[in-house]
Image (cartoon, rainbow, N blue to C red; front, side, top):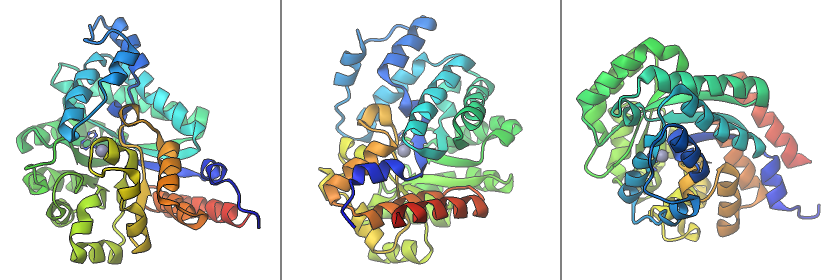
Length: 338
Ligand code: ADE
Ligand code: ZN
């Protein structure tokens, strides 16, 4: 069979996005529009100037500007518009299912009610299902630079709205903030029937991945790239088929890897780990899900079989039901054979 264009193949692949911060999808144009509506003055003159500021030295330098920009979001419509813009874009890239992080503490600390945030996001997710055919699940993230007590307060505030979210997660500054600090709040979340994930091994050491698994009892690890520093851990992740939600363009922008050519996703895939491709904060890192697949394919020379496996992994690692996962796997197998 003649070699087909891999860009076309990637576009045709159904994909699930499992590592996506909704606040990280705020494009500068929408930031200005919402800022104008809410009379929030930004320190930038225009969208170009904002984009010029996106040169990061590491995770913290990104987080500083990311939290500042989220300050324009105030009322339910803002959260709806933010999520709807992402979902429309994802749908155009054949993302069929998205499990979306949100950071309530970024908003409640500014006086925005939890209810405002969750109802705006939920309404956009509901419309995405009926108008775009994209399914979603929301994941409430605790900010790990804040205290475990504040995380507990946030969980208690959120539980009355539990029908609207599926899992809890842990994000923000990782260095010196081990997952074990949050053992109690994760235990409470799991006891309430929520699933659990956590960022670990992005800038923090491989041991944080072990802590997330053993203390927080997460069912997948967000990033996890630093597992490669611990051979025993790599063996365990393969044996237990723990999903890693990797974000190649993010890792280059935040200097976790020097270039995409240095990324370890291809090597970990070859070692049998359940790795997936995601966009993290696409408005800041230069690409959405499809762009992450395309750029990674080019840099690491991924073949059709590897690309199909990555797309299959994305559904297998999701919180969809077994029949839903099987349906997407069949669709991907059909594409691979055609
Ligand atoms: N919040 C948004 N993006 C993040 C990332 N890549 N790591 C940790 N926290 C985040
Ligand atoms: Zn992330």
